[in-house]
Length: 308
Image (tube, rainbow, N blue to C red; front, side):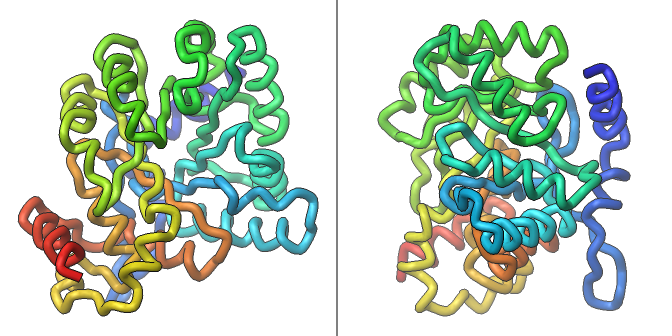
């Protein structure tokens, strides 16, 4: 465990240098480009703003063909500068498949491993988290989260103790339900957590009202889930052209448009789109590069999608 912590601390201190080497791409003219990253407020450690979710997309069981495809998807994510990979025991075989992929890929110095504890009983938490470590094939997780606030009081005690003892580096809580925003707000205001995961996208902006300002005030990192509304944004908007001015923020497709809107919010640290396709992963990861929207452009983006 000390070896794991030393390696991670080295990566954190290396900062932008480590990120640049893991995210090297070429832009027009052949100049190297750096993927956009943000600092985790509690530590200053840099995190690429586009991560990877695994709900449904990595739940492929033992199908060797599908597992092979997921190796390509995860490999592309890491090759193009990705960091955070997020999963949960709730996601079927996803954790086992992630572990399979990581073993095939080999060295993954840019990986920021994030999973969750998902059980009512505090007493079941340690065993479940140990099983997650086994499935991923990692010595410890960068981030352990309490999934959908399930049994959060008991699990938070366990996670804080694990953090103090070096078994995890960051502690978080998650929800994907707007009806839990009140509970989430109380936890954010009162508990010593590092990360919060919530739903935020260009059409579902409820988090802007209270949760994102509170995260900024409290110095909490924010992970945005459901960035594409489970694909509904593509269903609704893909038949429409991107606005002509999308090139001003280096958006070549709708995925990049949606993702750049999310991660350009000052309080959002990372978005975690999920995909089972390499071509879609390449589109997603393109949002790491080029110009990001400022506040005026973000307003313009909202007005455009709401006009369609």
